[in-house]
Amino acid sequence: MEETAQISPRLMKMNEQVVFSDAHFHLDLFDNPATVVADARKAGIGIMITAGSDAASNLRMLELCREDVYGVAGISPDFSSADFSRIGELAELVKMNRNIVGFGEIGLDATAIEKAGMEKQRAAFVMQLDIARELGVPVVVHARRALGAAMEILEKEEMERVVFHYFEGDEKEARIIERRGWLISVPPVESSRRKRAIKEVELDSLVVESDSPAVGRSPADVLFALERIALLKGISTDEVGERVTKTIKEYFYI
Ligand SMILES: [Zn+2]
Image 1 (spheres, rainbow, N blue to C red):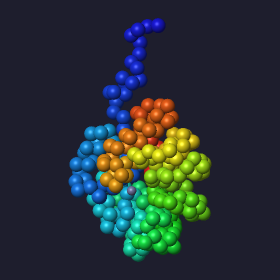
Image 2: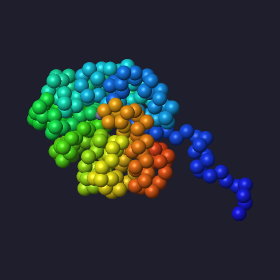
Image 3: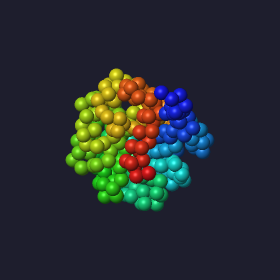
Image 4: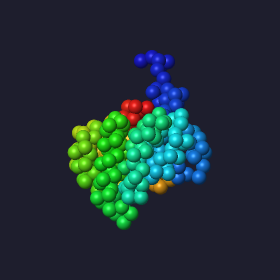
């Protein structure tokens, strides 16, 4: 065998920057969004998707979403009572800024029923799904202790592109999600149930998120989730990162 022949794939990678992505975080909750974005870029995070939660955070998104910072706008379960009347604005936001690429975070949260009862949460969720479907944009779903109920609604509403942010389901639910062509978003927090879910599905059904500053400290914390997936799938972190970026780009038409 000739000795001069090939550069190893690993060495090639060192020259060509691998682009990682953060499928879900909250840029508007940081004191200094510009620094957060600059630091994330230095850490190799090329694409970031910031999520709205109430009417005010959705409006802030109009300034924050530029270059490779994308956003999803939505009224979260927490605010589905307080900001119910603002749901109608969402379609306009998506049309106003080409970097607002979908709706989120929207869904059901059984731990938030003091702020908004389940009936109100359901009504806000379904109303937003209807607009998203009409516009043909994906939705980022928050389902806390209500995954089964949220999945039932999403199926009934015939939603095609759904990302389950901070997925907390098991392997059975993961399988259903994969079959429907939806995506599981893995946060930088480990659980044995999530491990089983990750093992159960193909890499193409997985994306990663920092959910910073609420869960992770910054978008760079997606590295933790990428490393866990790499370990469970027996491939390199770079490869997982590249595949996730490709999946996000395709799913959100970025
Ligand atoms: Zn979040």
